Image 1 (cartoon, helix red, strand yellow):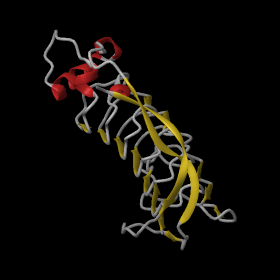
Image 2 (image 1 turned 120 degrees about the vertical axis):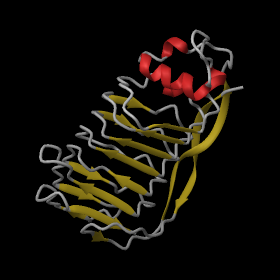
Image 3 (image 1 turned 90 degrees about the vertical axis):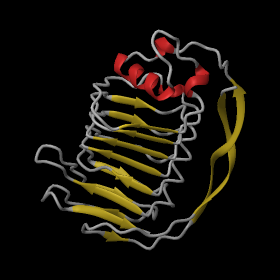
Image 4 (image 1 turned 60 degrees about the horizontal axis):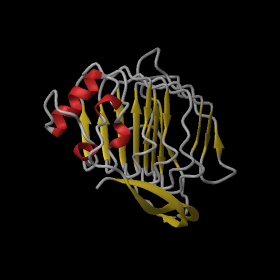
Length: 236
């Protein structure tokens, strides 16, 4: 039986280590932080036999799902076919324009998407998600506010102008090169030990003018448009 997840509030403590990247960097010594955040889970059963074929509005994504689940056309794709999948990797360009239907992957822990033309990605129901990687995409909006377990987020070559990670206390790695961000606030991410903000291509620069870290008085102006190798490295 598939499960939907409801949240309640419990204490959460985050710790971090170090990592290496060959980029100019900002190094900050920040203490582990204890805070309260929604993290305990209660489960509401879903109907495993529910036909969700028509929820995949992009035919190319539906085709990929059929391949992963071994559900041949014209058989229906059911909740039970996708709810237990933990890893989904769609690296090649499949012409995906929408990820509608991803919300039924209830146990998904890792999602890696290569080139696509989808402008939005809704992972608000993928509460088990730990790693999200989107490369060479066209994302304009991304909502990760429900993904409390998220530890690694990489969005490269997208069109993001804003990114809210204030409700991702477990986030350890954040990489957002080649987007169009103007500000980034990681003051509520005490587990964060690596942040990469770098440009990819002359027309794909982040133009970050402010960076706010976990220390309330720590605000920086970061010139991220000088050269392709210029970036930010945040080490805890």
